[in-house]
Length: 378
Image: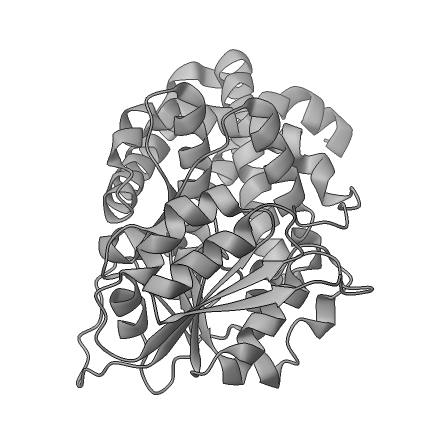
């Protein structure tokens, strides 16, 4: 029997086999990668020590956010030497005067005023580089002006992850919880992204971090010549740098709930879509291996539900639903445990809906992979 005749006679079976293959790929990611975060337990340390830490916040026209959030960094319960550096990048609002007032109360606050734009270096990289060079201490802890530490032990918890081999610590940047649907959707996407980059790091394949909650040593920053490899890209001061510098042995994660940062989620769909499109313009610059792993997961996720429907209609709905049910069971266990770790358990009842939503999510944001990003970070 010729191949075209075989395909014509057995295309329904082939369709089901393809569906099973896609389901197998999905199960591989859940069981090999994502389960690492779900069942993660921090390794006990032989010795415990505290390190001097420089917290760095870059801000442009962020007076309101600085007033609301910066005190959370300044009142940290951390007895070891530390400082908080705010790089005020060409702000036209009242940020300068607000920071001057805060300096009168908090001696650990240091302000760097930038009054000129960096030529040929778009985005946040130049002010962040200045902040790192200004830092007195080897360990720098980064967050954004619109973020507030989830507890007064944020600095303490993040620096506890360091040992002799560690140069990079990946944290979790969450969003304040609200009851509206958009907030839940944004927190789901944030959780889903964090589940990936934290699990990959646990698997020895770190590929990104988020600037809302990220720490590394100045030595690794200087060793890689800062952001010079991707200065032409407006974004990427967090994920592209980590993609370049993070290795299996030098990277750890910190997911203690006291180590989280919290920020206000976008209030409108337009704001969120703009933010996400800007973030996705940097992923095209990831290492080839990382792009393959991330792309294979997204591709299999995208195809799963169309193939489920097609297999149910054209082959055997009972077999198709059996495959779907098994994936759903594994997925539910992994999600529930991971959501518990990241304090997002209220999203669990909606995880099936959000999983289906990801089909449309990939369609919406796929164009961002080829769109040229805007040259500003605000």
